[in-house]
Length: 272
Image (cartoon, rainbow, N blue to C red; front, side, top):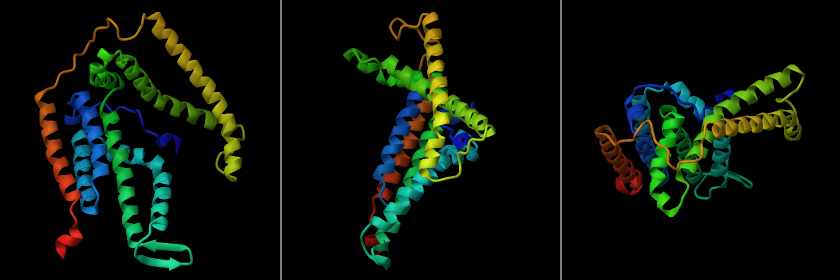
């Protein structure tokens, strides 16, 4: 399970998605999240799924990485699906005592599952195709207008990117500690919930110590190199909106409009 966490990983490439300006990718990713909460029917979600599949194909990211990013949340998806399936009122499909399944519950379950899967797949695509340094520049560029209000845009972007960058490192460190503890006889898989929680203590303590040590080393390294925030800093790469970004906005806007319009049609009334 630990090795399946892919948040923060970057896969180098030269695809259309890789070449987009990081600000463009951030804006489009946020827009995609908004669209997922606007679409309200199965047809709209199927159409959105086709759109996301085309984005993944354009990025040339292997599908196994996308599936790997979805795998860690399957328990949450199942839990949410069960809640929607048995807790939604409506026309009964099955009823036994207090336990019941409705058509509305089945519908809500499918919608929620697709929404979560698309949400993870779409947002993972941004980190897969954008390096942490470029992502920092993109976040800082979007927050730059707030600097006039004394908002620490550079510092916030740096903290977010450092956190994102060290997720794979912490995951790798956790896996190493788990293997070392297992070799010493620790058992992380058997037993009830309380026993599993207690078995995590020998894992969490060295992980916290290692994380604090790494944070201290990073702070010392930045201080030795004269880092003092964004004031007076120059950039090696200057962000620039290209014709490719304009085309991406246009294509995304058209596809989004189609998904939203179709996703809010009442097909039951339409076919009556």
